[in-house]
Image (cartoon, rainbow, N blue to C red; front, side):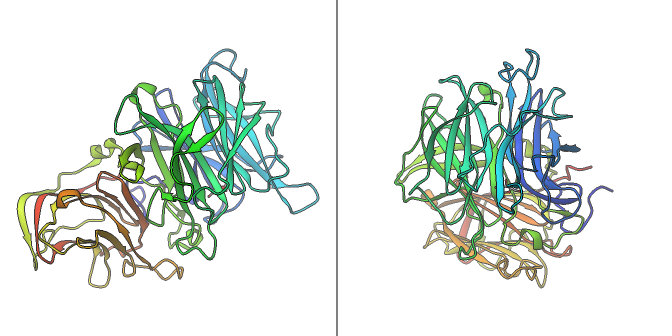
Length: 488
Ligand code: FRU
């Protein structure tokens, strides 16, 4: 049946075949979540970029649709966003509403090989099924900036304007517009702020509630950082928290502070859905589950790359400032098969609570008291030769992820890594939610303030599980649920 190839994710979005990178144009309209993506339909390495397209009613089951945008006389179709033009500010829809995509056209200055990146529009009057490039493309050029791309557009209620945030070298620039066609530069953010370890790409700017409050909100700016050879972890995504008045973003934290969206290696170019119903207050994020360091080398055939799980975002106040909280969308629970739950019991050294359990499409939930133990070890995708190990060390409050023996790690020298990050466990309570989908592991720590997303490529016989400890851990709850394929 459908999608049985080696390593093929069963509940993550993948293209049917060939190369995919960034998620693009994510927008909710008439009951459908649209996902577009950087796509090369002719091979499974990067090439002339198109926008692939899929729709979903629940963010879990996806339907593949024909390619939405393809290279034209203005160039390749790079990353960008889509909005609902509710009040026909563009005049494209004869007074009705419709979808507008705002993206980068990438080509070269005529007669040279110097890259040229300009912003363009396309619109759809039929729920995204067919698209017409605007005949006045491009609508925004900035010849002084070489890397000028990935426009993310949203409607700013208080000023009654469209706002575009766009990567401009190693900063982001903000533009405003009344009609999505004529754009005015209003500000730039980023000089001396956060990390500059790579070129800035794929920004997003949106408001989030703080501590689930209905009136306290902050603005969050996401910025991805391109791969640079001297950066160990390759490409990754940072965020800023602050204020935005429709023109200028002001960082709330110290400029030197760098906040990472994901502490794993495989979550890049992620942005959020536009036009989710306001009343729900929901903001849903999805990233490309790979890393430019080795993306073209991963050992999959027919298709290459998956997206992360869709994740709901919120903000939490901590002693150090505001922190992003990510939780997998609740709809993922609709594909759970009955699994095994352990409750209110002790786990002692020498034992494996998950002995005999198996699987490579899993949703795991751990809620443990680790006061009387030194460390807890969660082994995934185990066989005699292979395992992916997540370990929590209580005295140093570190969560580590080790994929050195996870399976095929030979395709790139950077891949076989192990990493350690801080995860504080208030009252000795260690909470982890872990998703395994054959070639990926996503770990949500605590309330979702620490997230690790990492690819792995284990053999098909590596299905074993282990939960063990070196002292005595108290199991409030440990649940292992197999997940169904969303593709059948
Ligand atoms: C990020 C990125 C974007 C660009 C796209 C091209 O991964 O480099 O900046 O628009 O990929 O495919």
